[in-house]
Length: 253
Ligand code: ADP
Ligand code: MG
Image (tube, rainbow, N blue to C red; front, side, top):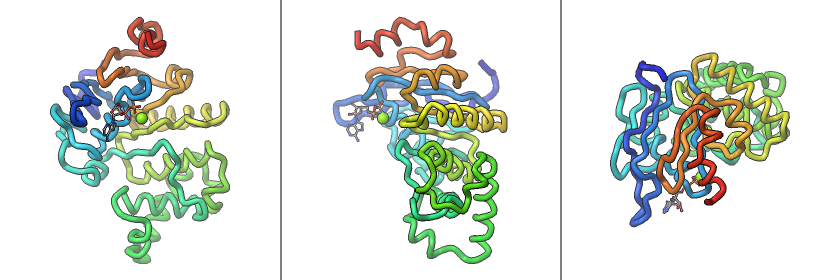
């Protein structure tokens, strides 16, 4: 792997909830321009790890470094503004609102305030700027023809991509995706994988949590495997696929 500074690195990141160690001194890196998957059985600590990276949860010990800067403790809003954007497992678009407005408003909020607060604070010039940026991102992800439709009228796979456009409107260097392929039909997964490859080509690094192994194995450059909070393996898909510890964790052996 590259000798350049990774876009993201975790160094012995630890999170305990009382006596339960959800993330147990986990270390890994996301190299710039890579698509990396965090996999593992239910309860392995994947979501907690995401929450440590985005600052939603504080570390018990260890560190998280983004583009060479330690980010633990600076808070979710500061972390987002440095260039880490996140999409959630469950689509959180406002279904009645247009695709364009959903993306524009999401960019405006930066995950920090309520939707209404966001609406009331927009002045005309700022609204125009946000909509222009939103339109640019919607075109970038290939949904320009759907821009003015209510977000809820789109197929689930398209809504998932709208969520990604909303995250992209923050101009992130690193995109965190929580189960982006969940519930999608085969052709929608293919379209999503194509989009993530496109973004990689445009220099965006991606860290995703995903259960669909076919999706992960065909798409990623590197895989990190967690089990009971501990990193049990990491490497390229071809190696991870055959790793005995990984197979045992998934088979519950
Ligand atoms: P995954 O996303 O891999 O399924 P999680 O990170 O959600 O796993 O959870 C890891 C472990 O931490 C689980 O045992 C879970 O019950 C526990 N856990 C997660 N969040 C909390 C919390 N806020 N308080 C207490 N325990 C938690
Ligand atoms: Mg989870």
